[in-house]
Amino acid sequence: PLVVPVTLQPALATLVLNSRPDGASVRVDGDYQGGTPITLSLAPDQAHRLQLSKAGHAELDQSLSLDPGETRELTLDLTPRLETLRLQVSPADAGVWVDGRSRGKGNQTLRLSAVPHRIEVRREGHVSQTLSITPRSGIEQDLDVVLKPVTAKPDAATARIQDRGSEPVRPPAVSGAARVSAPDGQTLVRIPPGRFTMGSSRREQGRRSNERLREVTLTRPYYLAEREVTNAQFRHFRPGHRSGSMGGQSLDLDDQPVVNVSWQDAAAYANWLSQKASLPPAYVQQGGRLVQAQPMTRGYRLPTEAEWAWAARQANVGAQTKYYWGANWPPTGKPGNFGDEQARTVIGNVLPGYDDGFPAAAPVGQFPANRLGLRDMEGNVSEWLNDFYGVTPGGGDTATDPMGPSSGRHHVIRGASWRHGGISELRISFRDYDSDKRPDVGFRLARYAD
Image 1 (cartoon, rainbow, N blue to C red):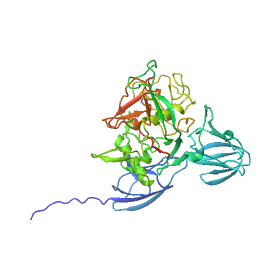
Image 2 (cartoon, rainbow, N blue to C red; image 1 turned 180 degrees about the horizontal axis):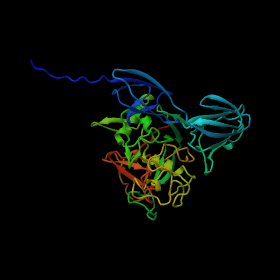
Image 3 (cartoon, rainbow, N blue to C red; image 1 turned 90 degrees about the vertical axis):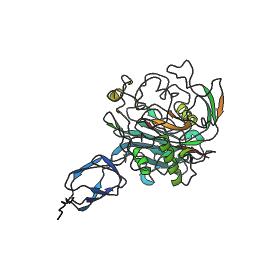
Image 4 (spheres, helix red, strand yellow; image 1 turned 135 degrees about the vertical axis):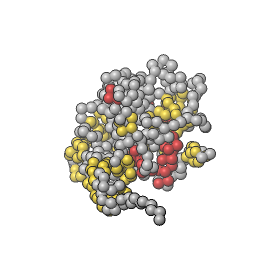
């Protein structure tokens, strides 16, 4: 008789993994698996490394081994990462609410997790103030809020947030009502319309030939996200996405901006958010690819190049400047995450003497906001924009609500990234383009306000 040897394989083990709070990203032996609660099938009789991470909490790292066929339920507690926010309010007996919960009255020191929080200050007979604040890791912040009486002039209410040891950083020059929240937790700021000059002068050092001057008028207010979309947010849409690494530096942490995504990926994410918010999609299928809807809808989308440039230009000191931080080169302080001394092992051309603390992409929102409340418009990652790439003709032409060429192979990319350290790339007018994903290109959201 024929004898066939049969080798039995040990039965897989099952791990039912929970976390407090839930929604933590899970990696097993370095590979991303999804978010908690999650059920995992693991090889038995070997040690597995579990890594849980969630914005505002310390990363948890634990090893475990399961027997063949074993089913185990495990609940892990994540430790909140608390930061200090010193609150000064006027009048001194004004009430304070954090994320909808009363925290008493008057001046106080708050210990808050390093995630966005909604701070409300109210008093009868005064106009309430609502601000979105994200405590910064390792940095104590001061928040001064002055409420105006209901009969005062419109500009009587003020608020200012300052990182200790840094230059003052003003919150958006708009009221709390001029913000909206997206289904992925992003906060978008209302940007008013206006007229400005896009491009750069021929005399500007570092200028490139695709930056021709052009007068642009934007007639519609729009919302622009305060921050770039993170890996964690994108993985709610596409759980298997990996942003990868560069030079041994991870680009895949939950709070880092998502990268290695194509323009098509970014457009698909925007449509996914529009569906969740019951808004019409901004992009439609054509020839197997997503293209801009005609006319453009009120759904979530990528900002147009003109919208991005207008927000970057007017967001600093109210006047057009060469660089995001002002007119002087090189930058002083730490205005953004650029190609600095720490990145020498990862990239070639760095900004000499500059150290922003990150050799590659930083967690979103680590650097000061501009006066509109926008973060990382320059630095961290470059951003996909809505428009196909093209070079406008010379001659001082003007444009109203431009959206770029009607077709093309490449899309516009704006803003310097952690890989940029040269005078050309760090200018606001710098224009880039591509048709494929890159490790330093991500995106932020926009949509019309009316």
